[in-house]
Structure formats: C-alpha cells, structure tokens
Length: 331
Ligand SMILES: NC(=O)c1ccc[n+]([C@@H]2O[C@H](COP(=O)([O-])OP(=O)(O)OC[C@H]3O[C@@H](n4cnc5c(N)ncnc54)[C@H](O)[C@@H]3O)[C@@H](O)[C@H]2O)c1
Image (cartoon, rainbow, N blue to C red; front, side, top):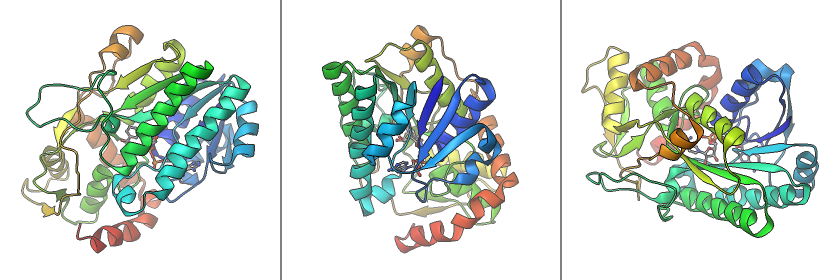
C-alpha cells in the first residue's frame, strides 16, 4: 500500500509514521509536510531510511495532485493546531486547515483515493463542568476559536465531498493527545520542560477546565482501526475516558517530579477557553473493536516525562522562544 501522510513531521503525524513503519512493513510511506515551526524533520529521524519526506504545502495544488496520484490512501494530519496562535493570527489557520483540506479533497476526488481526515473534538464547542453529557457523532458543531472553527469547516468539506462526489472518506474527531514529540508550546510538554528546568508550572485561571486525555499511540491505533474497518462517509469519535482538569494534570506532574503539590503559578486565562470536553467513543469500541492501551494516565504521563528528559536535544532549541512568546502575553 502506498500511503501519503500529510503533517507527518508534527506531533501526532510523526508518531503515526513511527507506528506504521514499526507495525506495517507492507506500507510505503510518503510524508508531505511544510515544516512550519510545528514540524520537525528530526521527529522522523528514527525512520528516515524507511520513508520519503517531501517538504511542501497542502495548499500547493500541482504538488498535492502529483503525490495523491501516486498514493492508495491519504491520512491527513497537517494543520495549524495551536489555539493561542489562532487568536493572534487566524490567517494561516484558514489557509492550511480550510484551503489545504479543500486542495487535498479535489485531488482524492480526481484520483479516486481513499482519504482519512484527522480532526478534533473541539469542533463541538464545550460542555458545562457539571454536565454529565459527552460528545457523540451527532452532537451539533459549535466551535469557539479560529482553530476549532477552521477544523469544523474542514470536516464539513470532507462530509460534502463524500456525499456529493462519492469520495471514500472517513473522519475522526479525537480528544486531547499527549506523548512524545509534542511541541513544547502545548500544555503538558510546556509544564514538563518547565519542571525539567526547575521552573514552576503555569496554570490557566483556576485550572478547572477539563480535557479528555488520550495517549498519542492509542489515537493512532484507532486511526488504523478506522482505515481497516471503518465505513466510508462515517465520523468516528476517539477518546479514552481520560477526563482530568488542568489542576489535576499539574499536580500529577509535580508528584512525578517529587515536588510539592502547591508548587505552581496561576496565569491569566485564555479568552474563550472551553470549559470541558468529553468523548463518547462507544462506536469505535463496539463497532471496530478498538480499546486503548494506556488506561492509567499517571503511567502514560510518567513515560512522557521520561521521553522529554531523554530527548532534550529535540525540544531545547524551541524552549526560549516559546517562553518569550508566552511571557509577552503574561502567561
Ligand atoms: N494535538 C491534539 O491534542 C489533537 C487532538 C485532536 C486532533 N488533532 C488534530 O491532529 C492533527 C495533528 O495535530 P498535531 O498536534 O500533531 O499538530 P502539530 O502542530 O504538531 O503538527 C502539524 C503538522 O502540520 C504541518 N503543516 C502545517 N501547515 C502545513 C501545510 N500548509 N502543508 C503541509 N504541512 C503543514 C506542520 O509542519 C506540522 O508538522 C491536526 O489536524 C489537529 O487538528 C490534534
């Protein structure tokens, strides 16, 4: 099978490529990645000899057309993915997430290529903290930020191309991922690398916002289940029942680092910060037989801390600039 992975030098995409090379020797992987600040060639270094990396944008229609024409399957991770950045400058979010997805869809339509679109549970907006409900595939879309609204737009394009043009596409909406190779601008790796540097972790507001955490390996195993057994045209929600508020995450990290539970600082909350996300992944579990491997959040977090400790050369170059960006907005 000839597989094209967009955004394969980013966090989830690079883990997907590693997992695919490790577990599916019959798959020939090509990565298309623009290598923005979030993409890192070195994230693919351990598999560099087994794959082809093409540096380019998913908005480049002739390039996308050529690469899709040479593929049997496209798995589409490429995106601008950081909420805070989308509040500062939404323009690359519209370009990559909406126009880039459109460009890919036109190519898979022309070549009849199977397409899997990676999306987020943030398209559903948020739930009240005391609401027992979870998101399902029929929850109405209600995105809050430029990031989530452009992801919602891309999902709707995929649905329309499946329905109107018969494109063989599936969509997955996953909850918050953690694990190796995640950019240190994101909540968990930022706190881990602060703690490694002896700096107190930083918590948005009171830290009561709830995220449904899933290990990136479990997300990617679910993506392969959908590719193998999913029904074209369907949307699958991916989550591992990992609801934790940000305060709990920070306290668990402090415990892993042997620090006092009160050893953190509060910083100004992000505007429009969603309260709670929670995923009902029963279709994926019942229909496709997927189950997560990382069921103990503390264990998964400990393994992630170990990875950041052992791979300082990977994250150190971005640390000072990332902290300077946060410092400029008082976070
Ligand atoms: N991180 C999460 O918790 C999470 C949860 C659910 C869904 N998702 C979705 O998963 C996907 C991957 O997220 P991530 O956290 O790995 O993001 P990331 O920011 O780490 O990686 C994105 C990758 O896309 C590349 N890219 C950006 N613009 C591009 C363009 N125009 N052309 C080609 N490549 C481009 C970047 O260089 C980078 O390698 C995204 O679609 C995101 O919406 C993420």
